[in-house]
Image (tube, rainbow, N blue to C red):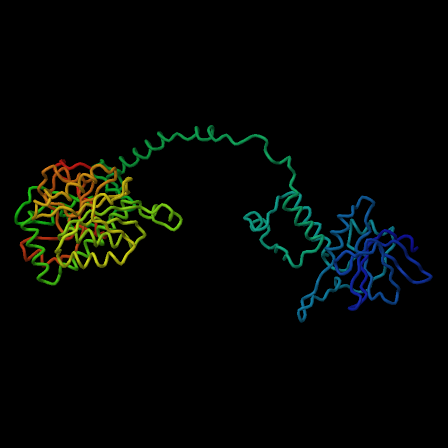
Length: 505
């Protein structure tokens, strides 16, 4: 009789101390009252030993799970073992395991086992965990299930995904089969025909139908595209969609026209002024507190900022390019314009630019020139008084501050001619700061010219004109009869374009 149960799958409960064992019956000894299981599982985990033997005194409950046929594989046995193992709730942080609740039962004969497969289950439960597991396996063969997807949640709404911490052996195997065990024969061999599918859509016919429908329904309140003039305007992402007042491009009005008009990049008109009005403007500003020292500092900062941009900006002046420091030659005269150039050179020297200052020797110079020169001597810049001491090789930039609005006779001086000849022969571009209006063709040919406050009517030799803000208050403009609205926006130096088209770029 004992040999009839060899090969059956049983579950042996040995109490809370030894736990629950499951496996296939390999031997039953009636004399010694022992039973041996092969391929055993202890509390749902496969044992390391191939066989375990139990005494009758250690067995609390013995339950027959199934009498399998000869075709059952090891994987099916593994799934059968793990399915019938049911963990209990966690108590004090430790998982306590117990087998399926059942009462003691008599072991049926082997001849009755096959009738139990077709009829009732040998377990007293109405629906065992074995039936649930077999049903899920049969459904997995017919449907392709994917966890965390729409198909998984819609086809099996009441099925909970097993937690990762509780998945052991058979559960991991079942999960892998569900994800990766799909038959490759179901994958289509042919690619999707995008061109053929697109050809089925007649876009012209659809739009014609829409237009016809809208034309018929205009009186009934349907929305019409309308003519291009009737359509609402479209805006770019950087355009303002809110309605505002009309833009006034001529917001600066001068009492005396300077003979030339410029415009900014945004289209604002900036008229030129005469030198007499320019001189009056600076005089009134100085009376209100904008002294010569403040004006020199502001013009020096703006001119140095423009020069740094012309030298390359951050692409040239950065710690990784310290071996290629730019060189600037400053040509200054003994007047206020020269003091502006010296202030610009001081700021350039503070930004790691090699500055060579040319200033001829004079017995007496203006106080602003002396003050700026004393500050420049505290930098790493170099000062020379002879044109022969200027660099022989081309420099990166030449800043011209030799000219003066009032003393035109300076151009007849030997030092002026020598400096102008050196600048014209040097192949470096020239930036002129506040150049005079009278263009006699004897000075230095500039590529850029920087004007202060409001521009003068410069000639072709001045090159491209820029305008800098030296901080003149709006009421000062109003006091000299100028209607003024700042054209600078967010900048202190802006380019000006000649509206007559006679200025070279």
